Image (cartoon, rainbow, N blue to C red; front, side, top):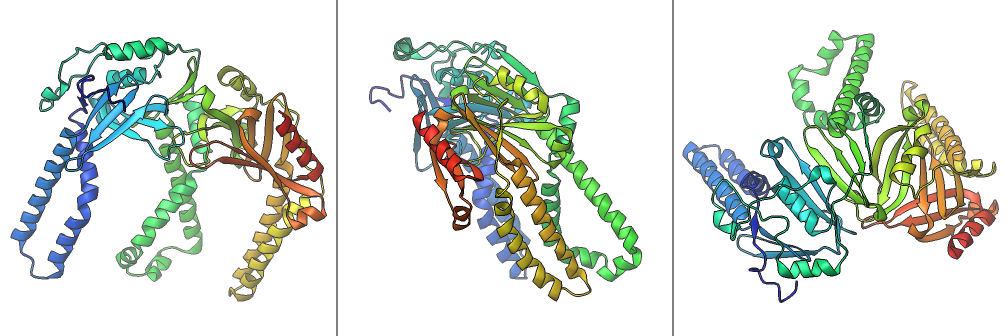
Length: 516
């Protein structure tokens, strides 16, 4: 932070008083273990003194409310000409400075509680950050837009910022229910001089927009494959309460007398259908109202029913387009469009969803409208037939090593079910062979890969951070190789592979990238 910039140059601003509830949630996480230790030690002693228990609960609540209120009171931020400054902490004062040059995106979200008060939660992301560098848990939407304006990240004309009445000292009104915020244009003379030297950040105009209809939303939810997540959660819950459930039904023998084998089969099928329906509901709630907008220099995504989220992605940060199809969507010719971006708020090296569901024939037009620098209509070069054995050999040997002991040691002929594993491996190898291909030209590299799920990546040459060709001893005998490219994406790079391609073509592709 510049020494010339004093705290009096810019008015300090507090969060909305509703944010006290979020501070309470954070404080509960910090105090829950001491409280549990007190509660458990009281019960273990056997001779429970309810006066002590009541006093402990009362003390916990007093500390909870007091610490949360003080945390809110001591949390202030300053929107300055070159960025945002945040100060927080009750006993130890912490200061965070984020300059506008480092900011990757300013995203907002609003759950039911925040929407009831016309508030949003704002997260400031920086390039290469593992998590949001700054989070403002409850501020008015117009204040979020003022912060966007300070970073030069204005939204379209439909998101115009309402003028707010400027106050000389917002801190003075901290104890009241209403919190005042400065106007968007109230940045002092120094900031105006700085902005005059830099390119003007006019409001972004909406160039293109596309929304996901209810029919496509339900189709996306039904084919999302998230039933596995629901089953995993149910299994985890069952494992925690297994003994209690067995006691509830006396024993598993009682269940077997109630249900014969056919009834149990119908019950399992009903549970799977119920899990699938739950997955559909959860996915639909998360992606409801999905809307993609192309502004002048960025893409803006809005989605969510219970919690409305808004994410902004600068176009120049998009490293690659990633098309994905699971087994169900491949049957219907449907595709999900994802993007790999530098510093996007997601898992390291992973892609983020740009649009949930398109038909295969709509992809080219969609990219032409929202990401014209990418071309999905390419001529694919498949790998040679000799690569099939390279895909199958090692996985098949490993599956046989796992299946043979199962056949020998699992009783009552159930071990023969392990024969499915080698068969599954052979199918996986064939699909991997069929899906592996590549294309290059017109300053773009395209890679196709996958097995039961198919993936295609379209990568501008200038986005490639590094590339290499590797060979295993088995590949060297067949003159095959694996080609690898890496792109910037958060802490860890996003990596794409072309497995078992001819070595001479891999070397040629490597030279082609070097010369571009």
